[in-house]
Structure formats: structure tokens, C-alpha cells
Figure 1 (cartoon, rainbow, N blue to C red):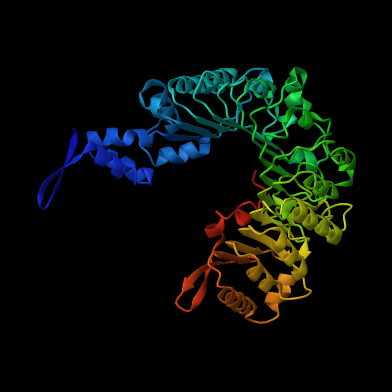
Figure 2: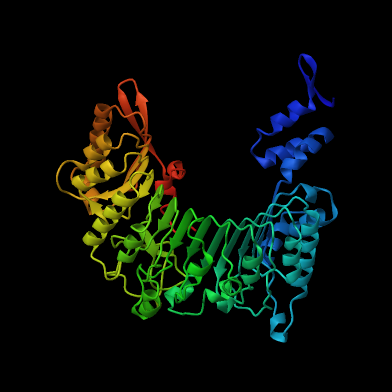
Length: 540
């Protein structure tokens, strides 16, 4: 048995290679693992499979390359060196996940009706590397230039490939359109930034011939909805499936975001109702804030399929409407239900504006032009809906149809519920483990109801609204008083399951001490594994 001689103050000790390999599995930082591999040939061969298991290559822009070369003795791009090593050496056979990202040098060759030499040579090198990755399972394309046909053909030949992520560039530079071939082994397909004006490749053949597909994620550029430009059609993506009468028989997860176009029944024709168990629809159906020019397209999504045989276990949607409540009443058995409290804002598509559903706009951009923005002084939260009635309809649909199976629930913060409504929900949902809700004054103390009536609750999040703001601001130490009151309820109820509490932007970790429960301040990063926080966003 191969071994490694380790020398210490007591002399030499031989360790079997299996023990050394076991030790290296506990090294999480790949930089430390790479430094360890440089110390001896044996450690190099032991660490090699982990070092090349996931390859993430970034092609830097010209300015970044100049800055890098100032601090390096090498004149060769690290991206090119890595591609050369993968296409000519043995390490490529160890790669299971490959990600390509970065900026392709811009040229004016498209003005002459031809591709740049760099783009062609880059695709040839990538295809050569893919051919060497015999156990490749996940491939992600995030370069700001589309792949050429040869790259798609290389992926088609990889029988081990199960996950493919394709991020289309947002540039409108003319490029030849390519029909992506089917990948028979594909289980998950993610396509991002779809925009017909950006010369996207045709994915319809891939959707038709990838018979094992279990997860489909489709994301459109929000520009089309913000500009009321109806240039995308579902028929462009599903026409081959519809013509062949094909439904995704193995599909279990669907995630779609930002589509703006008419409803012509393609989703009903290709998505099987009985097999899909996870659905995420964000800004898809026009029930959120939208301009008046979108009304004709949005109303085409108001009709509900005549027969509902949904088997959804996880459902996430940020557009609230009466049609949505009627759909929730059409089936039973949801275990996780998430209604994010943010929607895409109106205005300049280059800004990342979002609106809290009780009317507070916030923007990650520093400025936005007034000429391209729609007024947000009085945003229409859910057009054509009375918030109180709509909130009651959602509560009734959840209690009557999904209460016995529901384990995790996040309501939108536009719906405030009284203590009596919370008690009604507690009776209908005895197994609730995570709960995010906005409260409203009326009746008993709602915090007491929440602690006493949900015995299995592990995480409780009180969403930010006017009621919570008034509760906290009523005293100088309002948040401290609220924590003390809730801690007293936890002690009286002898709760043994509660681990996380949230009051608006405040997060607390709950633990048991010698004198009862202890609430310790925590950060949002600490609770992202809890779905009532982690799912409250517009990330697909």
C-alpha cells in the first residue's frame, strides 16, 4: 500500500494513501488544497480529482488583461492557458462541472457580415476542451457572446451531461442564429436573458429531443414588459413540441420569469399537470404593477385551464390576483407556498427598481431618469383588486385546500391578518414549520397567538408593514420590548422547536438557556437557508 512519510519531532510516521485522501476531503479552500498539492508528487495526485472537479474560467476584458499583465511576468491570457491544458492534457477527464464567463473582445466584423476570428478560434478551443471532458455533468455558458454550432454539437455528444445553463448576451450585435440540438441525457435546462432582439438561438429542438428533462428554467429580459414590447412568443420555443403533440413527461420543476406575450395555450399543451411538483412564476402573468398599455396582453392570462390536476408541492408566485386564488382552490396538497413581497418596478429597464407590495419603492441604482420612468408615487400594487378582500380570499384558499399538508408558508406583506385570522390558520395548518406573515390590529395579541397555536414552528417572520412599524416605534426601545414579550410567550408555551425570529429587518436566533429562551441578534445571511427568507426575492 502506498504511503506518505511525515516527519515530526518524534521521528517518521507513515500514513496510508487512503488516510491522506480522507484528510484532503476536509480541506474546503481550493487555494489551500493547491498549495498542499505543490508539496509532493503523491499529494498532487491525491488532490488532483478535487482540484479539477469544478472548473470556472473567466475571460477578462482588454483593460483587465492589461492590468493583470502589469502585475505578472506572463504575457499569455490565463483563460487561454487553462483551455489549452483542458484540451490537450489529462485533467479534463476529471472535470464534472465547467463554467465559462467573461467578456469577449468587441470587434466590427459584424458590419462586414462575418464573425470575428477570435470568436471562431474561441469556440474551436472550447469544443476541443469539451471533447476531453468525458465525465462532464454540468456546463454553464455565461460569456457575453453566443456559442457557435460546434459547441452545441460537442455538448450533444456528452452522454454524461445532465445540467446545462445558457445565459444569452444582452448585446444586439447581429450574430447567426443557431438551432440548438437535443441533449438526450439532459435533466435540467436553464436559459436566461431571452430577448428576440438580441438574436437568441433556437431552443425548440432541444426542448423536443431532451426526453429526460426534469427541470426547466426560462428567464426573459424584463425590458420587454417594462417597454410594453410584445416581441416574444411562447410558440417560438414550444412550436416543435406542440406540432409533435409532445408533453414533457418527466418534467417535475418549472421556473419562469418576466415573460411578456399573449397566452395562446402553449403551456397548457406541453406542461403535464400531474408530474410537476415545483413551480416558480415571477412576473409572468401581468397581475403585478404594469403600465396601462400592457392590459390587452395581461388579460389573455386571466383564463384558468378548464381542468386542474395539479400535484404541486412547492409553489412560488409574486403576482396576486383573484384568478390565482381560484387556481389554488382547484387542487390540494401544497407543502411549501411562497408569495415574495417584491415585484419589478416600472420605469427604466436599466435600473434594478423593486417595489415593496405595500407601496415603498427602493432602488439599487443610484439614479434613474424621470423621462423613462413611470410615476411611482401611488403604484398599483395588484390592479383591479381590493387588498382586504384579496387577502381574505388567499387565506381561505390556503386553509380549505392546503392546510393539512402545508409546512412552509410566506404571505405577501400587503395582506395584514388579525389574531382571529391567524388562529383560524393555525387550526387548518397543524404542521406548519416556517411562517412569514404581516399582522393587523384587532382582537388578542397576535404575537401570543402565533407562539401558542403553532407547536411545530421552527422559524417565524413578521413582515414589515404599518402595524409592525407602529409597534416598534411606539417606544424608544420598541424592538427590545417586543423581543421581551415574545420571549415570555416562548417560555410560557415551553416551545422547543423555535429557532429563528424575524421582525421586519431584524433577525434573532432563538436558543435555550438556564433561565429560559435567549434571543440573539443575527444577520440576514444567517437565515437564508430558511425558505421564508431565502425565497423572498426575485431570483429565479
